[in-house]
Length: 56
Image: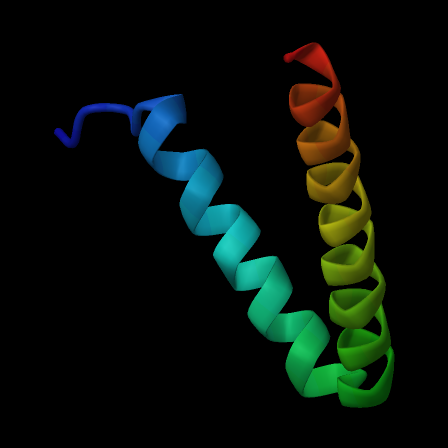
């Protein structure tokens, strides 16, 4: 009998499968989402750099 899968191993696999499914089914929306996510990440990074530079 197989042991039950551990959630730490199962969750990343499910997320990757869902992302791949989304990319294959809706490539334009997936690209738009990736662009928005990257833009948001850059904004957060810029804010953190501004905060760190204002400290001293």
